Amino acid sequence: MKACLFLFLSVLAAPALAGEAISGRFNADPSPHVFNGKVYLYATDDASNSGTYWDSTSWRLYTSDDLKTWRDDGSFLDVSVFKWARPDAKAWAPEAAFRNGKYYFYAPVGGDKIGVAVADKPAGPYRDARSDALIDKARDANAGDEPIDPQVLIDDDGQAYLTFGTRVPKIVRLSTDMTSLAGPIENLVIKDFPADDPKKKYGEAPFLHKRNGLYYFSFSTGWPGQIVYATSKTPMGPYTYRGVIFDYLKISTNHQAIITFKGKTYFFYHDNLLPGGGDHKRSIAVEELHYNADGAIRQIVAK
Ligand code: FUB
Image 1 (cartoon, rainbow, N blue to C red):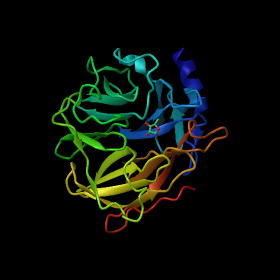
Image 2 (cartoon, rainbow, N blue to C red):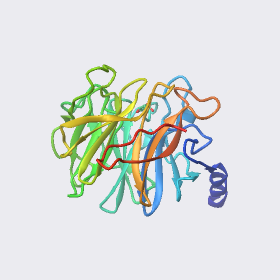
Image 3 (cartoon, helix red, strand yellow):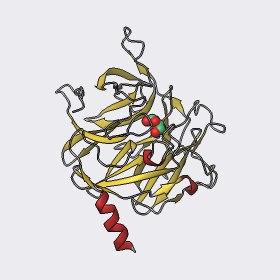
C-alpha cells in the first residue's frame, strides 16, 4: 500500500523552472523551509476549494532536493487536527518551524484563530500542540481584525517571533516551547511609505527574514497587492520602507516567502500559471532573489 502511494505521488511530481508552476495541482501561499538539506514547501490547497472562495480545509506539502523537481507529498493535514475548529473552517496560508527537535506547524483556521501543531518529522503526523488556539481574535488583546498568515523567524539569539495579520501587521515573541506567547501582541510599525502612492500600505502576507544583521519585513500591499519590503536593525521594528520586490499580479492576492538554499536566495510566490487558474486557483513558483551591495533587494520580474 505504502509503495503504491509513493508511486502515485511520484508520478505527480513535475519539473519546475523559474516562473513555472511547481505542480500541476493548484496551490498557494508558499511556506518553504530547508529541513535536513531538503526543501519542504507547505501550502494552501487551492485544488480542493470551491473555485469561488478560498474555502479548502486542508494543507498540502511538496518537497524538493533541487527546487526544480518537486514531489507532491499530498494532503498531510487538515483543520480536524484542531478539535476546537469547525469542520468547515477554511485552511489558509500556513507556516512551519523547527526547534527542540520538533517541527511546528502554524495554521490560520477560519480567519479568526491561529493554531499550532507539532510533529517529530516535517511531514507529520502532526498533533495539536495545545488544546486551544495560539492566537484567538476573541480572546487575545490586539490580535487584530483577521489573525491570518502566520510566519515565524527564530533569531540568532534563539528568540522566536511570530508575525501575522491583515491590514495591520502584528508581531509577538514566542516562548522557547514555540507553542505559547512570551509577550504582548504588538503592531509592527512601518515608516516612510512613499507619500505619492496611497496604495503602498500593509495588506497581508507578512514575512520576516534576516540577512547580515538586518531584518527584512516583506508583505503584500493588499488586493491586488505588490510585494514590498521594509528593513529594521531590530526585529520588533520600527521598519523603514525600502521598495518593491514583486509587482502586482492579475489575480487578487500576492503572497511571498524567501529562503536561502545551497548558497542562493529564492523568492517563492503564487500566480495564475495553469489552465483554469485565477483568483482562487493559484500556482506556486520560484525565482532567484538578488541583493545589491547596499543590502537592497532587486525587484523580481516574473518570467
Ligand atoms: O489563501 C487564502 C489567503 O489568500 C491567504 O491567507 C492570503 O495571504 C492570500 O494569499
